[in-house]
Length: 198
Image 1 (cartoon, rainbow, N blue to C red):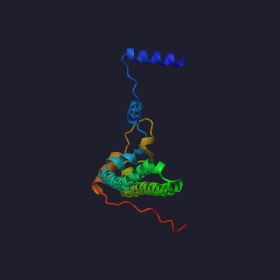
Image 2 (image 1 turned 120 degrees about the horizontal axis):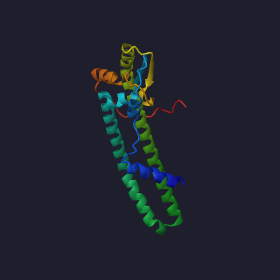
Image 3 (image 1 turned 90 degrees about the horizontal axis):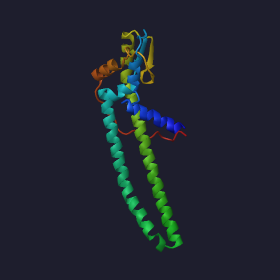
């Protein structure tokens, strides 16, 4: 019954020449409109990181570091893959003891490789977090001054707003101010925190 109803609705929509396209958050906000709420301002931290020059430079650098990490892992994986294939091909001709010994040695190498891959991923995530914190520290005084200049009394995350008047969006001003303050950021892959304190 529900399938027939769904097909009927779809065919009626198609016959009417209508298309069902989900609205983006920005479209939904614009379609709802309404009056600006005095003192309520909006900011998209994601847009500040994605659209500012320093955020784009950080993304590019993170991409370079991630690619270097992938290349390093690929170089370690190739000989491991070769040895695994070789072991699979000759496993039947080996004695039980040889199979066990070589299999355990390969298993240790696989575990070591997986551990290194996990550590590199953690280091990339840690590096991303620290880079965003640095950008956030640079943006913080700009957010505060823009907040004051717009006479805001409440600051909301723009990306969480479902709809309404988006007049008091501070994001473009913060991006412009950040671009005037800093355009690039330099960093390397962060080391994992030491576990010696445990």
